Length: 244
Image (cartoon, rainbow, N blue to C red; front, top):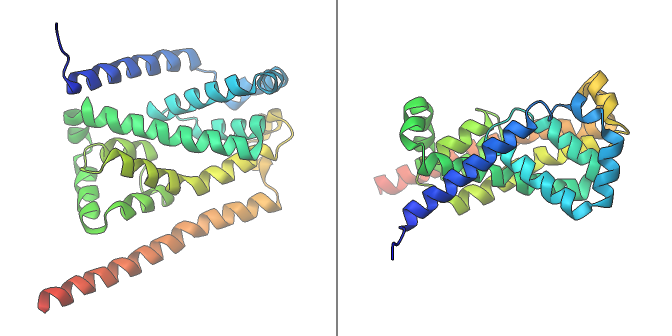
């Protein structure tokens, strides 16, 4: 009886996952934009309310797939989910779907496309490896809060580092949470998607959302200051220990 090694088994699972992602992307092509969704918003909301469990699961799978294959529609999709499901449930769906998709990209990079990713992002990989060696997982947390590079690049480069998947997951979960709150809250506060489609995301702004966006903008500055202060203390401690 033939036995498939664990590595081969994981690769087969990933290949099947990629195939599913590709098929999903083809089916969703041109359907993730706000104008396309806004044309059917009444039907969409009614169906989701009548089939809450199924619609939540489908939303989770679609969002995770879009994140894994880097479809450039994350902000619009997050707003739509907030509008359909409201803040508590929408936040739950998007928070876990985004990290699930990020973990899929992480594993695809690590197990299937290591050589290609290393060649394509050689300089970024060197920079991240050095930072991780000095600061550990806190550097990933900073990257999630401060947009120093696109999220999809972070996902695939981290797949080539020694970081454990479990660590990548929980740090990403925490780091992306503040931004997720703001965009889901924005979607939950709008009466119709057609307003956003016609006027853009600026139509969502009100005093509460302006405050949330302001806090979101200040958070990376505060985190970066704390990060540098902690890093300086750590480096000075290492120098003291070495001199002693």
